[in-house]
Length: 91
Image (cartoon, rainbow, N blue to C red; front, top):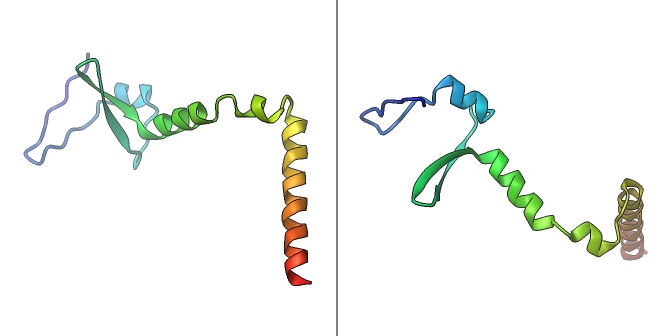
């Protein structure tokens, strides 16, 4: 268990062991999350990445993307379509 003191401005210093566990560096942001009546502090970047992963879960399967090559092929196809649209607009 780590202990931190709150300043008159409501600031705290996060103990080094906690910063290491959360992989926090100078300038990083943290998020406070209420879970089961407790407040949890998390690395905001990690939370954002997890939320993005959750939002995209199942999309690859839905789009029929089974391999990395499938993704590369899809990106190439989209780029071709964008280029064709640009060419049509310029004609």
